[in-house]
Image 1 (cartoon, rainbow, N blue to C red):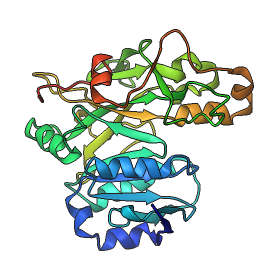
Image 2 (image 1 turned 90 degrees about the vertical axis):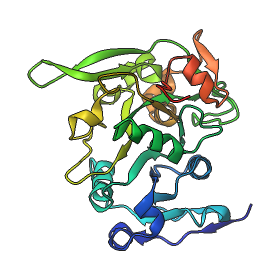
Image 3 (image 1 turned 135 degrees about the vertical axis):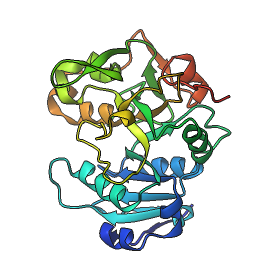
Image 4 (image 1 turned 90 degrees about the horizontal axis):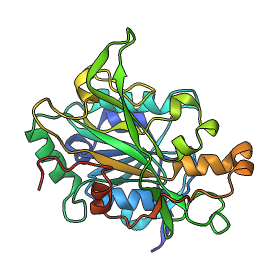
Length: 292
């Protein structure tokens, strides 16, 4: 499939007169850090039913022609701390009522029964359960052979940890337990925690949520509205999803200290990822709730 450069527009210009697909959603926000597996990330989201994809990138990258109708490249603000969350908050303010998903390149949203059901179908059911946000877990993917994939990415031979995950109840600044909120840990962040800053070791993100007036996302991937941060409603379990991500593997291979210290990511609890939602549900890494 031929690739072409996509025209890039300022985000403010796009949001000032959003096309119909942005007004209805679901909309994905993809942050391009290094171009690795970017086309695959965009194609995955388009195939799962994202009506529009805002691509934040400092580099104009050629992309497959078939993505022209769904991908809208936009110019991010200059590199500053917390830039990603500032950009997401600008989109939240401009698109109230629209379901949003955010991720980085080389990350892939997997949700229950995603092989046969679209993101929109899933979110329609989730909204009927009076939920405006969905907890997602960033599940670390990594290559089986670092000699073959020294940059930490191999979509054809990728693995994940089948165990070693745990959760701690989240507490307020005063030390009080927060209702239905948990901090989740595991994966490469846990096994190689000496190479991962403490504030980046959690797996949980509110990766799917409905924009609302006054709502903001914080740099720790939590939302300003407490109910958005909950695992489920009080009366039964709700859907959760996974963002299967090579991001940590890439970072560990890019950093000179961790690159020299880590000779392999695979261990006795590694299992090859088959890219199915059933595998993640069987491992307990996401929850179908009442959706059958």
